[in-house]
Each structure stands twice: as C-alpha cells, then as structure tokens.
Image 1: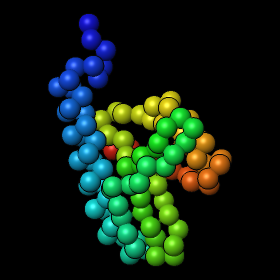
Image 2: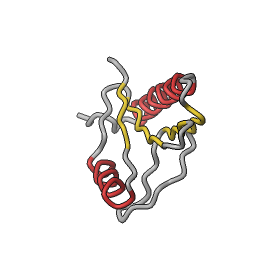
Image 3: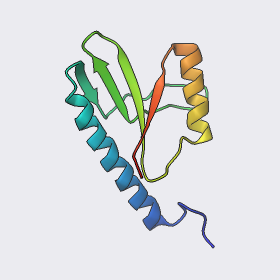
Image 4: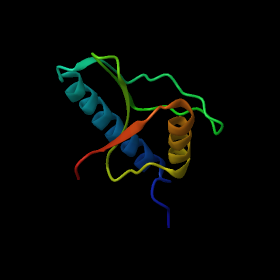
Length: 103
C-alpha cells in the first residue's frame, strides 16, 4: 500500500493541478482594479527552517503587499510551511493568506 503522494505519477499530477490553480488565481487577482502587480516567481524568504516560497505575491496600488499560498485538490499547508509562516508573521510582519480551490 502506498501513502498518498508517494507515487511519482500522482505527485506530478498534483503539482500540475496546483500550478494550474495558482496561475488561474493570479490572472483573476490581476484583474482587480486595486492591484498594481501580481508575481508568481516570488523571491524566497529566509527563515531559521529554510526558505519560504509563496505561490503568489500581490502588490496593491496603495503599496500594500499580500502573499498567497494557493491550495488545490485537497492539499493543505504542511507543518513546516506553517512554522515558517508563523515565524515570518512574528518576526518580519509578513502575513500569508491561503486560498483554496473549491472541490
């Protein structure tokens, strides 16, 4: 019996689904009149547990920045991501938002 996500084909398919959702979400966000820029090639942010790479970085016209973690296909934020996110929030003031794809 294989655990979910250990089959290489399943992992590749999961990545494709996640990337497609991320890209679709970025396009939709970019259509908002308050958005100045949307990037999916987000610069890694260092934490004591390694770099945190967000799926989408949104810069609003007022200068505020929003970091988004896009989740599709039942995926969830793993414990290491959550640890990094909490550290970034507490130490750098960087808050991330999880956006989930409807099943």
